[in-house]
Length: 227
Image (tube, rainbow, N blue to C red; front, side):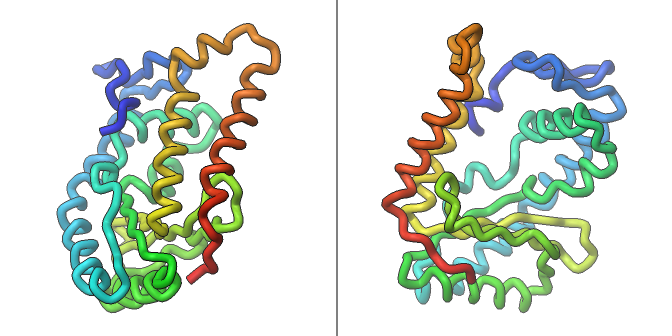
């Protein structure tokens, strides 16, 4: 569980509200629907864990596959509530919010650079052989992005009831991503926002500095072609 998951929040018959950003709130009905969607993802975790372990059994020896970030394979309920509340605040319908979420169950596989492209291809082949279906439009190749490098895609079972995301990294890009995530959490923290309050252009300057640090960390990671 990340540090952000321990931040105080209010739940109850009136719904849910985030203490750090009061505008992020859910009515009782919204909170019920969002929580039910998260509970369904949690119920699917054991089955998906077994699927990913079967991929590792097939790919670890031949392609150096490693399952990273196991503690984050189920997105936290508070994080999902925050995301849902933010989208609802922007006018996105509740049914669309819960229907389009792809990363409540998310997994990260790393491959050595020499085996990366073939490792991704073999993962696709194994998932297809196990009856999983790629979600059209979900693939994202961001190896040329200076701030975030990697490749990820969303899969689902044939009935469409269970969706899960797989991120593909090299050990170096995963390490940089992990370091950058800590920087992002720091930026979002209440302490940082308070320290920047009232300073003209401070927030923009901080964003630019964060992007420079993120890009610098990825500078040592060679871009990989898509699968």
